[in-house]
Image (cartoon, rainbow, N blue to C red):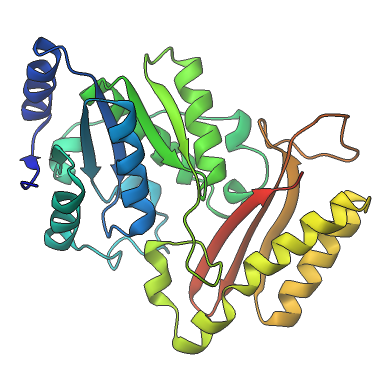
Length: 284
C-alpha cells in the first residue's frame, strides 16, 4: 500500500475532504498524538470498515498537559508512525504544527462538566479534559468526518467526547475501540516505554486486580468493599494508587448500590515509578 497523503494545514485537510465528498466517499477520523502502537492501528482498521477513507491526525496537544507533565518528552516517532500507517492502508495523515492549531491570538476554549467532573482523572489532572475537548472539537470541525473513533482505554475521555459532541450538536458519530492488550494483559499505551524492566514485569498486576474486583462484584460484594480490596492489593503490589472506582458506565457517576440492569465500569489509575498507568474494564 502507498504512503498516506500528509496534510499539514487545515486548508489542505478541508480541500482533501472536499475531494472525497465530491467522489461520494465517506471519511472517518482517528485522532492520535502519534507514537503509534497496535492499539492505535486497531482503531484505524476499525474506521476503514466504517468509512471509505481513513484520516489519522498526529498532534501532540500542549493544552492537555499540565506544567508538571511530560509534553516535552512525550514520544514523537513521526516517520515510524507514517510507515505503520502505510502498511495498513490509511489514506491521509493530518499533522499540523502547534501554530496551525493555536495561532497567535487564539482565545477560545471548551469548558466541560458532566463526565469530566466526576473525581477520576479530573481530580489529578484538572486542566486535562478542557484541553482534550478543545482540540477534539477543533479536529472534528476541521475534518467534518462522518465518524471518529476513540479507544476505551481512556474511558473517561471517551465519555467526555461523547457528551461534548451531543451537547454541541457536532454532526459526527463517535465510535469506541476496544482496549488492545499485550499478551500478559497490560493495556497498550505510548507511555509504557517509560517502564523499567522490573516495572514492566509488575505492570500486568493492574489488570489482574481489576478482574479480581469485577469477580467480587459478580459474587455480590458491596462496591465500597471491592474498591477497598483493589486499592489495598495495588498498594501491596507496589503501585502508588490514585484511584480505583466502580462507576456508572455511561455517566461515570459514583454508585452506592447498583440498579437492576445498570452497567458498571471499574476504572483505575496508579503509578509505577514515574509512569502513570490507567485502565478499566466492564464490571458486569
